[in-house]
Length: 82
Length: 153
Image (tube, helix red, strand yellow):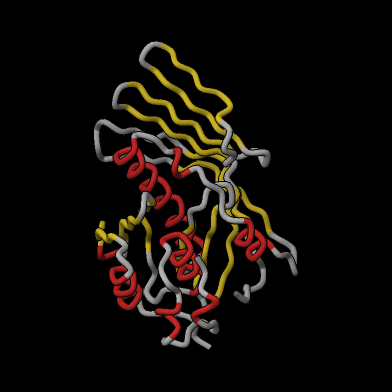
């Protein structure tokens, strides 16, 4: 099973979950993410792997079930990681 | 990193903060006026590969990166952490909020050993900021711990 998600979908979810995103260098997928006192510069691959998704979910408190519809994570909304 | 500040020195206008972890990981933040020097030592980073993507997770500092190759994920981790330190200095004038270890379940998930780790040492990460008022000196002793098998999350 392909456990990856297109970067554009991840960016969409992050914005929807009110994570502040500032593109540092779009050409190499470097972004500054900020939410609730956490601020990081990150480099995303495209597509984004499940470990990265879990990290983002945990660190930036985004609901992982929003990714669920993509069927890339075999977990249910109640299993979301925060 | 441990939450204990082991040593805080104030000498004139210079302030130095050092934090260490039982594993040997340590962070040093020294600044004078607007000039900052940050050093990270003996940080352990777990790396695993899944679906063709590499993922690197810091243990004593909860920072992670991914990449399409081993070299790329290391580069992304080192550059990303350095850039994140710069952001923290710009935003908080401190790296204290960055010195938080990865949660225990993350450690467990990534370090559960079914096969042996291959240990390697990346010696120096040099970073010079383009902003004149900030200077980050090298990271030394980032220990990359690589899983030989893919991880089922």
